[in-house]
Image (cartoon, rainbow, N blue to C red):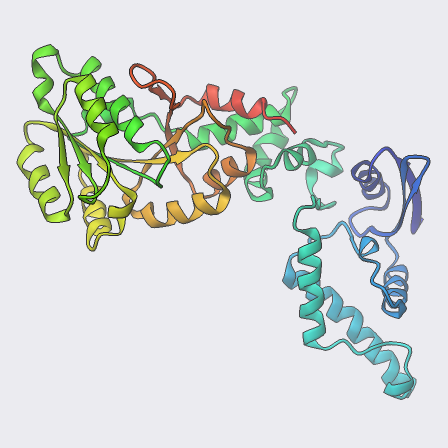
Length: 391
């Protein structure tokens, strides 16, 4: 059998049936909507593929909805497939001595291929494409499609495929959530209590100042007794013109002094003078992160076992923001604090990029309560959070 027609409730189910019946070489020749259901005609015959592409080139309007196959659609692979079809047509014309100007087939040059590929990428940007050669589809399992629909990336799903496929009698999605949570979560309670120097970096509005106060409160409750508060210092590293009243208010609430420092030289001098006998927490303003020499100093501090750099990422941060922020701080080996979780949610796409970048999440934080509201990340909690993500 080289062609087969199926009717299903949706396109994904229909494509799944086609791939099971016709195998990994199956392509979609025709898609129709019949009585509210999806009807798909598939084929694994190379003549059908060539014929279908030739007909499409004759049409004045592009029928993009009929160009999808179940193969990978990365640019290089797509171009090679098109080149193969184009070269096959050129050979036919050479054999039959058909003049180029009278041919029914068009010669597709490199520019045309690039333009076509870009159009395809734009069309497919927000669509879910599955590889019918993947083991999970061959084994009649649809968990991968469900994870893609939730927003998890193909790369992060594939990373745990072997563990998922070898496990029996356990929901494969649940295995995936626990694998990803195990990859992301890094306990940091002991690091915070054991560190002499704690830097808190992150984008503006990501909750650095609130987190600074929560960490100070946690240290006072678990490290120092009432008469040892002087051993904890808070530094506001920001331009002189910056309004730091919020941090001052938190300092008064915690009965701690807040030191305002605006230049890197003074900050280094303060840390060197206090790090032996006191703990120092530094709240770094977004403006000061670009100070000349700052990131190099932070990278040098990261070699100290009693130093921890906490990077705040607001729960609503998008994929691009996470990627650029992590790229800036990657050599300081930051511990991620997911903040403002009581105001917004972190979704599957953001969790995927955190996993792809090998980020280590140590703190979960809200923003509406200050004292006593610091929560450390736990694998079981994060796995359950992902399990509850809505489609």
